[in-house]
Length: 165
Length: 345
Image (cartoon, rainbow over all chains, first blue to last red; front, side, top):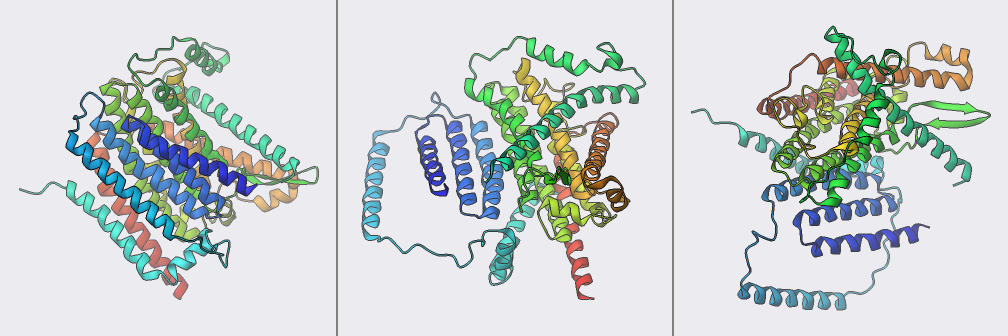
């Protein structure tokens, strides 16, 4: 049952990612991206990584995408005020796209199917085990990155403070 | 997965869903009655005895009103907005433990839909998702005022989510688990978390007021100064969904506060009552106590609404970013130090 659910969810992920690119309205793109992230959350649940699933849910769907939506709604981009692209930009875009395709084909040709990674502990994704791992061997990088994030937040508050004249 | 398990969960979900809707419905009535009481008036008293049928009359009115969809709005998103608001309000109840397991006919039934070990984070995720209903509705209306109101509401919700998350971290330091079931069981016998985390509780409660858009944080829909907020273009039952979602949110956040800080379904003298009432009725009595706590919180929500005037927008942001967040961080540090001290000595 797990595999069939995976295929359904994977197909949905690909479908909604494509919709992100193909929808004309940027706000619709962001909404499709939110749905795409939701399918990723389902993938994490299927992989028994509950913590990662719920963090993906909170951080990507609940926080980052809200800010994306925020900016796009304020900008209110639509067809009328979209600047017309010159031919030069179109040609450059085509060349860049072709380069990307060549690179991707090359890298896919070079890869071989790796042996499937077998986790020693299938419950690694549960909060308890993940926490032990993060606060054990990865203590220093974890603490440093959390301090970095906290600093960014404090910095944001500080920026809004009025300077005393 | 046997079929009786599915049926059992289905019945439980249906009951919880029904109860949430019923409580939200009668919260609208209670709100008007409480307002009337606080302002020395009578309140609604025409429909039925004591006006008890007033919510039904309001519901019928909402359904019967003409439905207007603005000409240049995005039709689909205009519909998705209120639906999403309702959905995110309802799914939060899935992880709340409503009572200890009940034994009915030799079968032990847990009064919780699912006990995931990231329960608190799930609630937090649902709360953070709630903002989409407002934003999508405001944007899809294709009205400048709706858009500005939606953005105002969204920035309020995002700001207070941070302080809420930080106040939960201090609670997690005390409990050591994220499962709401385990947190409730730890509070058995007067070990209520509010006694260990008083500052955390106040922070959480203030943020809960802001997240549910209740007074004094009801800037998203302050009718008197602004023209209505993100739901300006909405009419009929779509408007009803937005208003109704607020009451469900209030119920769910009351339930979460009672679970996290006020012992959930635990009450003094629980063990003697358990012997006295037997395995079927004792857990149900605990559930009744839990609902009593929830109603007390809902009354508190209403009491505050008719007591404290609304914040100005800059005051709101000042409170959220410059007072609640530093206080929450200080609370985490102090809690951590105290726990480290206790463990060492």
